[in-house]
Image (cartoon, rainbow, N blue to C red):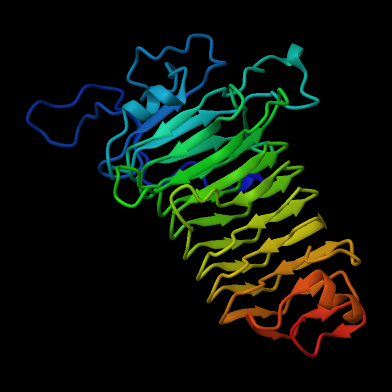
Length: 341
C-alpha cells in the first residue's frame, strides 16, 4: 500500500536541452519538457508552490499548474501523458506551521483515455492528501478507458456526507467509458465510498488500504450495471462498514487481501465464476455472513482463506453451500471439510 512504492521517476525521461536545438536537425530540442516516452508529456501540479498558475502549459516543474482539472484539459488520448501531483502535509496530525498544508481539493472528471495521475510522496506512506470539496461528490470520476491512479491519500477532512474517492462509470455506450481502470498504492479514510465501479470491467485495485469507510470500501452503485472481470488483490481493509460489496458480479478475482474488524468482508451474492483465494479475514466470529457471503451464486471458487472463526462458527460467518467449491479454508481449530450451509 505505501505511496513510497510508486515507481518514480518514470523511465525514458528526457530533460529540456540547456541550449536551443539546431534548425533542421530532428530530435535536438523539445517543447514538452520532461517526458516518459516518445509521445507523453509530464504535467506538474503543485498548489503549494510559490507561484502556481493554470495559465501555463504545466510542463516545467519550476512553473507548475495549480489544479489537476487544468492538467486534464492538456492531456491527449493514449499519448502517455502523466499528471504528477506534488506532496502536501494536510493530514490529521499535520503541522500547519510547517507549510505546504494545502491539499488537493477537487472534483475532477477524467474524459481522456490513457492518462496516468500519480501522487508524488516519496517520504510518506499514505500518499498525497486529496480531500473532496463538497458533500456527495467523488474526488475523481473516471469517464475514460485505461486510466491509472496511484499514490494518493483520499480522506474526508471535513466530515462531509456521501463522499467517494474514485468513481468509474460505463453506461453501455452513452459516452462514459470507465473500464480498464487501475487504482494502486492509495489510502482511503473516512469516506462514504473508496472506489465505486459502475458497469466498469477489467479494473485492477491493488496495494491499497481502506480504513473506517462509512458505507462500503469497494462498491457497485448499480446505476448502469454490474462491474465484472475485475481483480482486487493485496489490499488492507480495516474497520469499514462494508469492505468488498459486489453483489451479482461475475468473474471477480479477490485474492491475498487482509480484512480486520470486519462487518461485511466479501459479498458477491448471486454472482458466478468468482474466485476468492488466500485472503485473511478476522472479525466477530459470532457474526452472520460477515466473512464471505456468496448466497445464490454458482461455479465460484473459495480456497485457502484464513478465517478468524472456529469450524463450528464457519457456517454462520460464511454462506453458502450452493455457490460453488469451498476448498482448504482454514479455521482456528482446523480446516473446514465442507462448504458452509
